[in-house]
Length: 203
Image 1 (cartoon, helix red, strand yellow):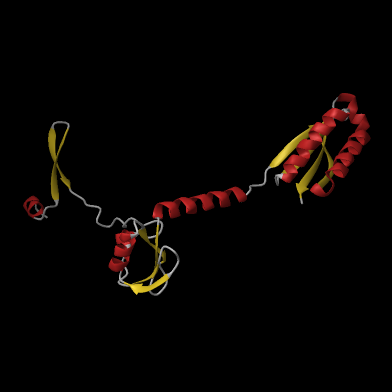
Image 2 (spheres, one colour):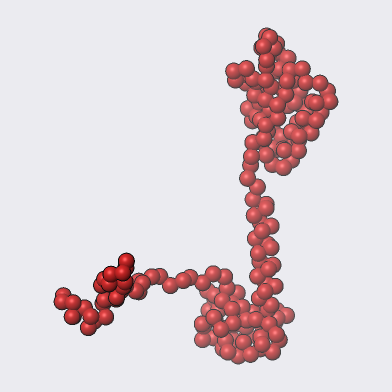
């Protein structure tokens, strides 16, 4: 294609780069996908020719045009919100959209809080852990179990303590007994190198 033909068809755009003029093809993103709407359609974004209208107090007004529904919403100082777009005809309601959006976001936030991700917490004991420290650590074990997390109970031996593994096993069995109905032993006490490990899961 000759330069003259390109110019006549609008394919070339002039550009100046480093003080030197160059010819460049002007492109337009004509194949870019349209932006998708998120959330319900509101007011003049409702495209149906007819809708089933629900009033602000929940009353069924009937099938009307979106224009008529918007007039009623404006008279009430509220919005027209499409709540069932796939119905035939679509169902719309007169409401305060700002309040509706806030309450929806609040419910979604509460639902996310309930979707608890189980974590593994670790509580470390020693063969010679005294009564006070034992009670403090057990409170932590029970707290984690109540929150829905697993607890890795670790008992570390040092030096000559390896000769008294029976004391370590006795202490972990005591932990298992004190957990009671708050949890279940997922992994029985097991020696791993210089430490004994037990895994407790919530019930």
